[in-house]
Length: 323
Image (cartoon, rainbow, N blue to C red; front, side):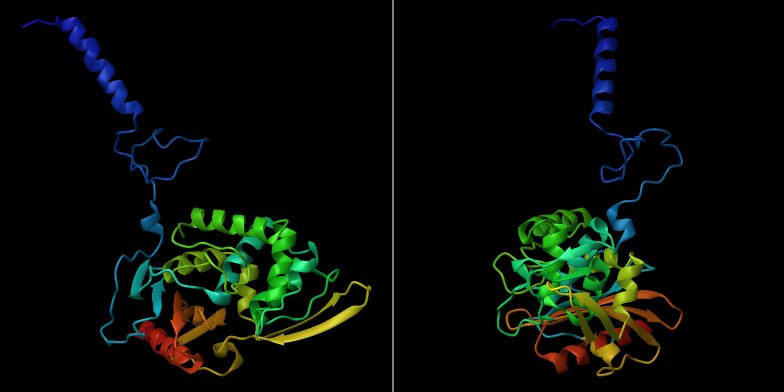
């Protein structure tokens, strides 16, 4: 057996210790946030590096409530307590489903991040939507309005042509904007979703999960403009058509809790949200609500049977806030 001198052993030990340090094996969690300006290994003592799980509600399986409330087996949904980072209810939240117009939450988030509210948008041929039943305000090529106007009409009335107007101007094209949507979704942790358009009209390879929508909606409400718009019951504005003429448009909110067609449980206030309906996606709704103390919650239901059942289920889900 060949002997190794003590000096050589010391050198080998030092090299091994350096290797472990360089490879990142330390007491700092791998998922900790960091920046190139300040390394997480600098001044590690008494520092806290929050992980994704510490900042969001996390759920990996169905969660039932003591009341026994349930949505139907084909639907998916959840109720999330934002202040306490707690998932109160979950059903099929990681199931990939078509989002219908709940897609427009992601569209608004990307537009607010990359655009400016006073930015003038000019309509191209992408606004000429001919899909049967698609909601729109009737934009024509050459029509103009600001991003602020467009966001109001898209979120309050769910206008599909306005969603395309936003996308083509912010992203350069529908395809370019979809790339931004997927990039931002990944950054938010919404990794089980994929977008190919800004409006949610039926398309192959366009899907989300209820949990991903919670993440996206939670990011969107950080923008005051988004939160203010979804709280409005009606919106009126004037935009300019290609001939330079002023066109007046007034639209009411499609959200039943704001239009008066649905009533929130006692002790719960619905701030606003987004509706979505297509034959393939079913009936969908995501909401921001608050309890009597002002604590915020996000509630989402996807792929419900019909409009009446959706609002009945959502009312029951919101009632879990008070228990």
